[in-house]
Image 1: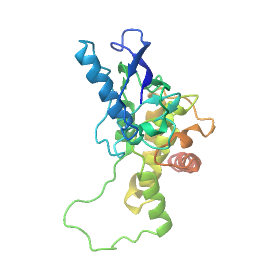
Image 2: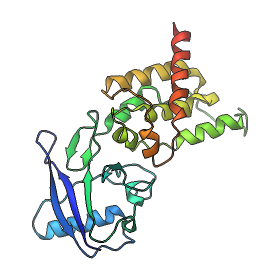
Image 3: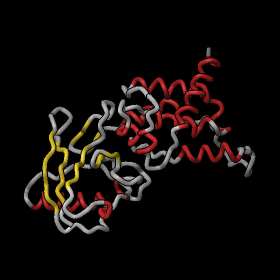
Image 4: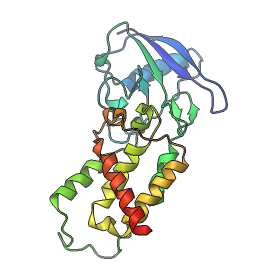
Length: 247
């Protein structure tokens, strides 16, 4: 395959960026999108040019580091992470636009790399449980209803990639925050901090400068792990419940 790439290049957070055009040839349809970018960077290095900076880690679809907007879609045209997107999803001769996440709370570090530490601070605000230490309890010592266990597992699948923010017209982090809150709040272990968790995490989300949620649904559509949109409604109920109880 031969492809035309239009890639966002930005030296650092303090400079203006622009799209740069590159041609890559000899791309196998079985390559992942990141392997294709590796090929581009090998060519750039051989030519003495600065390679394109992009984030990646596990390359197994479980860490969420590979955050790219491809042809206007977070992670690209398939519902998966960028590292699991293969070049067979494109055609020979295609022109592909590659950009970083676009959100004021995700400032560009360089090229396609953005600072997503705002997510870390949201989790830090309430993503913990005051579980006692010591010997392990007996199995099933704290029974968890199956519906609650299923809900917790569903929300625990959020890998914090930020696709929901990148896809949202307002740059909202509501889907991410709701996943983290709902994951812990439905479990018995999360009960002691239930009220403070939701209030603190929502307050931190607002403090980070994310936009407001208008329930347009782009966030859930872009999520590679399929976190459902009703998660936001469930979190809103938790927030209202916490406000009433704390007051």
